[in-house]
Image (cartoon, rainbow, N blue to C red):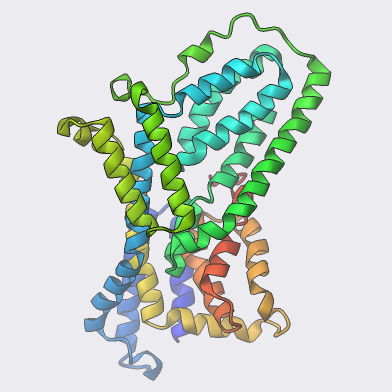
Length: 398
């Protein structure tokens, strides 16, 4: 009965999310709570559900939220930190330098596209990345006569790599769903991300060489649009005289993150507070900058804490364990030890046809619990699950 209720809850959750009947925030809270109440009511008739007590549901949900609190705090301050760096104009000189250097050479343009997208993608906001990069590079592609699909392809691939940062959606969702530390998921992925970035530059080189042979190098006399490009959209917030400070602070923060000097959430809290006070000493300006990005922060962090309710009930009631035992029963024993690579392969088609919320909160906990029966740690399944993100970006659901 517990397995049936668990599967029913997952299916109901996935249907409501993918059909857009409910937002992820609402579904993550209401659906598990309703099914927990159903399980409690059925406990009077089924011995397998008698352990579910109404008085304990609150503690179960609260425990789930507590486990995800560090991830929620990390996302809150990471998003605010990079938003602050963009507002202050930290990346503007790099963008203008790239646009001036590429000029009319198709090879330089494709390489510049990759470099620019990787740089702007640091903030973890895909929509912002595309708007900025397309606005910067599209005029060059049009004037030179290059195929704009090349730009689209390179930007999507770059976003697929940079989307693996802890403040990006997939890693945060995977860490939340499996209640593991986001830094434990992310840091071992850094070498793979570096290799992937190197491959992107090689791919850009191939595309650029092809376009250079087709079009040649075009002499562009007027590239004045490069001077007008700015990632920061608020002139009042720009701090050009503090770019060196902001750059050094960001490098120190990233190095500390990789070294694990302090927990990731604490590092971003400290980094954000230092950057905010130095760049905007006025309290009113500080409030304005925080309020400017409150909507994007709330949308992400709210889902993380809602996921705490979902995972808390899923594990606290024993549903995920019951479902995983059923899953293990049908898996050939020879495949069990390979559930991590199997998860990585499955993540590609599943995230193409499903939303991230449906996959990470609906499917991944079952795979992770099943893998635990073969001695595979949840953090390994979390890493495997984010491998398919470049494929997910090609999905019409994005």
